[in-house]
Amino acid sequence: MADSLSLVSRLRGRVRDLPRQVAYGPGARLMSELRKRRVILVHPHATIRFEGPVYLGPGFSLFIPDPGATFIVGPGVDFRRGFRAEISRGGTIRIGAGCVFSYYSLIQCSTSIEIGDRAMFGQSTMLVDGNHRFRDLDRPMVEQGYDYKPIRIEDDVTVMTKCTLVANIGTRAVVGAHSVVVRDVPPYCVVTGVPARVVDYFGPPGEEPAELAERRSAS
Image (cartoon, rainbow, N blue to C red; front, side, top):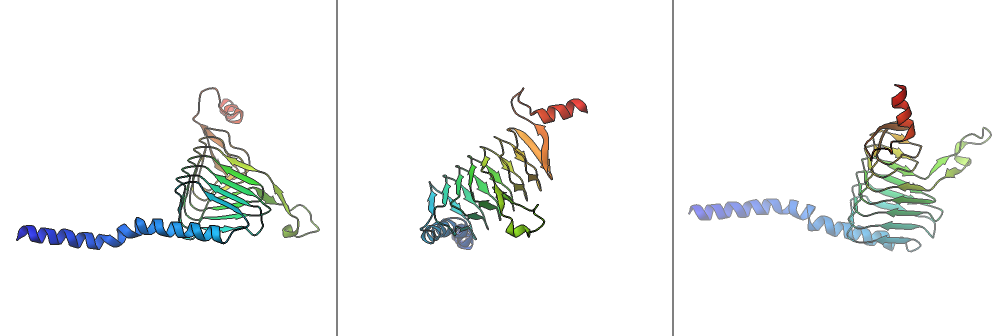
């Protein structure tokens, strides 16, 4: 009798747990696959390629109004809820293997943005390759156009939550939360602030960036 009750209890537990298992297992994979197919279907004018297993979370979207754009993603990339990429003027976005984009990440590209392997981007991070011009006092800002610059994010970069990136970032660099990166970040450096500046270095000896070395010697 006790064995029968134990068996019934285990079965009830499995039944109760079934929705969770489906939602976070085969259900999630199925919905991701459907999102991939939709993205490719509605952008026949662009080169879109997922090179291996890639997870597209709810709200994943691409905005590609112009022909000739490219969006290529390596294997093992995780796009969580609300990711969006906007590619214009035939721009190219390439994302390496094993990258993670947390909730509501945004990439805007009109030239090229390349991201290496295993880069991680925190919630609400924005990555852009251009800035509005604004110095012409005779025209509104929205009529002055943009200044563009191709961007490269190297391998193993970590970007914390709510950052804006408009410059290159070197290997294994760490960008602190709420930072605005407007200058290139050297490898193995920690940067924080608005605008972001180097506050620490943890790489091989002898490769410390000059700006940090000078600041430390002066203090």
